[in-house]
Image (cartoon, rainbow over all chains, first blue to last red; front, side, top):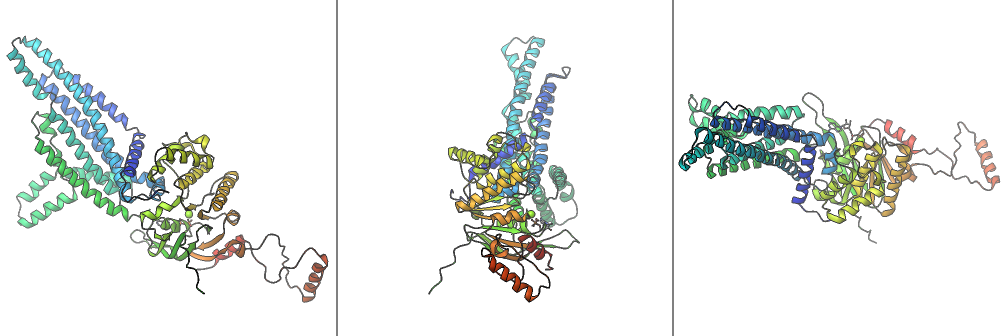
Amino acid sequence: MTSYRAFSPARIWTLATATVTQLLRMKILIFLLAFCALVVAAGFAFPVLNPEQQLKLLKDVSFGALQVFSLVIAIVATALLLPRDLEDRTLYTILSKPVPRHEYLLGKLLGVLLLIGAGLLLMDLAFSAVLWLREKLLLAQIIQALEAKTPEAVAQLQEIVGKQGLNWGLHLGVLAVFWKAAVVAALALMISCFASSTLFTVVVTFCVVIIGHGQGLIREYFLQGGTLAEPVKKLLSALLAIVTPDLGVFDVVDNVINGEAVGLGAALAMSGTALLYLTGYAVVSHLLFVEKEL
Amino acid sequence: MSTAPEPTPAVAVENLSKVFKAGLGKRAFVAVRDLSLTVREGEVYGLIGPNGCGKSTTMKTVLGLLAPTRGRTAIFGRSSTEVASRQAVGFLPENPYFYKHLNGLETLLFYGRLCGLAGAELRDRAREMLSLTGLEDAADRRVAGYSKGMLQRLGLAQALLHRPRLVVLDEPTAGVDPAGSRKIRDLILGFREQGLTVLVTSHLLEQMQEVCDRVGIMAHGRMMREGRVDELIAVENQTELVLRDASPELLAGIRELVERDGRAALVRSGQPRTTLESLFLEATEEKP
Ligand SMILES: Nc1ncnc2c1ncn2[C@@H]1O[C@H](COP(=O)(O)OP(=O)(O)O)[C@@H](O)[C@H]1O
Ligand SMILES: [Mg+2]
C-alpha cells in the first residue's frame, strides 16, 4: 500500500486524460474535420469579392466556427460528464479510491479544457495555413492584375493585403475564444453539480451565456440612465457580474477580424479575468459537490 | 487482572441514521435507523436483508460516498469523512460498471493510477489481478462487451488492486450464473485465508452461510439479529425430530432407542433451532 498524498497532480492528470478519451470517443473529432472543410470552402469561395473582403470573410467564417465549436463542447460535453459518471456508477468506484472530490472536479475540468485547447490549436493551425496561402495567392493575383513592378508599389499592396492577412493578433483572438470557452465550461460544470438533468444544465448554461454576452448592454440600458440611486446601481451591477460571467470581456474577435491590433496588455487583462472566473466557479463547484449525495 | 484493549475494528458503524430528503411536498425517507455494527480485523462479515432495507446505503456511508444524517462510521479508526481512510479499502459497488471505451487492462491501470500506483509495478499488479479473477483472456476487450459476471470480477480486481486491508463488496454474486458465483465465493474464501477483512452484502443466504464468520440481518433500516453464523443456525451433522403433542412416555421411548443404537447421541431436546433462511424470514417480517 502506498501512502496517501493529500494533493496529487498525477491523480488529476489521470482523471483529465481519462476525460479527454471519454469525450473523444463521443466522436467530437468530426467537428474538427467539418471545421477544416468549412475553412477551406470559405477560403476559396466568392472569388467575385475584392481581396480584402475575401480575407475578411474567411476570418469571419473561421472565427464563427471556432466560437461555435468551443462553446458547444464547453456546454454540452461538460454537462454530460458528471451525469454520465453517476449513471454508469463509475463515480462510486472513483470516489471510493483515495481521491478527494475536488481533484475529481479539477480532473474533469482540466480534461475539457485540454480537449478544447487542443481542438482550438489544431483549428488555429489549419485556419492560419489557409489564410496564409490565400493571402499569398491574392497578392500574386493583384500584382499581376495591376502590373505593379516597382518595389514600392509591391510593398504598398503587400501592406494593404497584409492588414487583412495572417498576424499575431489572430492568435490572440483564438486565445480569447479559448478563455471564453473555459469560463463557460467551468460554469457548466458548476451547474451540473446541482442540476437534476443534463438538459437542465445545458439550457441554464446557454441562457447564462446569452446574458453574459449582453452584460455590457444590460448595464448600459438599465443601470446607466434610469432613476435608480447610485449605490443600488452599483449593487445590481456587481450582482450581475457575479451571477453571470461578463463574456463581453472576451469579445476581441471583431477587432481582430477587422485587422486592429490587440495589445498584450488587453490579452493579459483578459486572461486574468478568465482565471478569476475559473477559480470562482471551481470553488463554488467544490462546495456544491463535496456535499453531494451519490 | 486487566483486560487487553479492544483492537481497532476494521469497520465501525455507530448509531448510524440516514435520511434521504425528498423533493418539495414529499416525505423524507429514513433508509437507515440507528444502526451499529463492528467488523473485526480478519473476519468476513455479511450484511443480509431484503431489497431496500438499507444495506447499500450503509456501505456507501462507510465509504464516504454518502454523509451520515446522525452517527458516525470509521475504517480502521479513521472517520469515513477523511479521504485518507479510503487508502485501506477496496469497494465493489452494486452492479459495477466502468468506462465502456476502455478495455479490462486499461480500466485497472486507470484505477491503479488513482491509488498512486505507477509504472511496471502497476502493470504487474494489474496483470496479477486479471489472472486472479480469470479475466486474462478478456484483458484487451472493451468493457462494453463484458457480461455481468465479468463486470463483477473486473470490479473485484479493481477493488483489490492497491492491496487494501478491507474489501467491501455490495451484492457480489447478484445476477451472476452459478459457476461465476462459485468463483466469486472462492475468491472471498481466499481473502479470508490471506487475512483480509471482508464486509459483504447479499440476499442469497446459503452463499453467505458458507463464506461469512458473522452476519447481521437488516430490515427496514434496522439491525434485527447479529451474531456468528454457527451460533445463529444449527449444525449440519445433527438431525431434528420435530414432534407435536408428544407425550413424556413417547419421548422416554425415543431416548431409550437412541441409547440402544450406540452410535447416535441425543445432543439436546427442546425448541427446534432454525436455518439462516427461516431466521431471515422471521427477523425481517417483524414489525420495527
Ligand atoms: N439517493 C437516494 N435518495 C432517496 N432514496 C434513496 C436513495 N438511495 C437509496 N434510497 C432508498 O433507501 C432505501 C435503501 O436503499 P438501499 O440501501 O439501496 O437498499 P439495499 O438494502 O437494497 O441495498 C431504499 O428504499 C431506497 O429507495
Ligand atoms: Mg443494495
